Length: 204
Image (tube, rainbow, N blue to C red; front, side):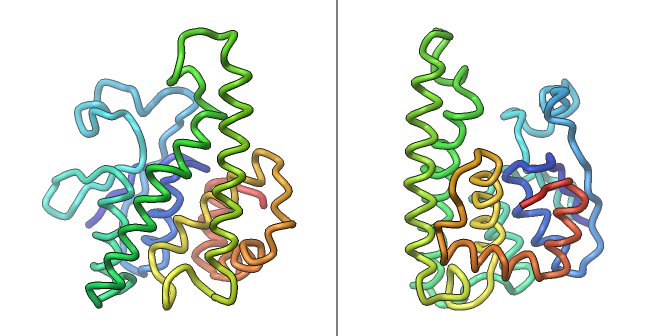
């Protein structure tokens, strides 16, 4: 049985949704990130990065990073492209989410990662928010005339959904992103998404 270590509202929500939708029995392990549970000695032994998500596989091995966990889950549950070109595009989008969109948001919430100079925090946060908003506009453009981020629903969509919730959290004008907002509405109508939002206490 799979075990997911996740933090409410964190990027681990994507894996949480995928597992909830799979119908397969799994063990959810909620981490209190505010209290620093992800930096405990026991957790660091499992994931030296001290972050979520972390997926414990059936054989006891651990898998970290959305760039690995989501393709694995997608292939396991049939929510991943089978065509080589489509798979490459999916990997490209996951890379964009993990390497560009997420770090931009981290500048807003974790400026201490980028400098020890507290006087620089406001500038880091301001630029991070501007960059993050720009990436959300890009995602809105990707969704023009489309129902999902790929040719059909896949693990890409819960990942893209996470960033919408972060935009709401940062009080960005998300309603102006018409395609992205319609996508959000489609996502929230999915029963598994509703269960995860309730469990993680996320309001959008």
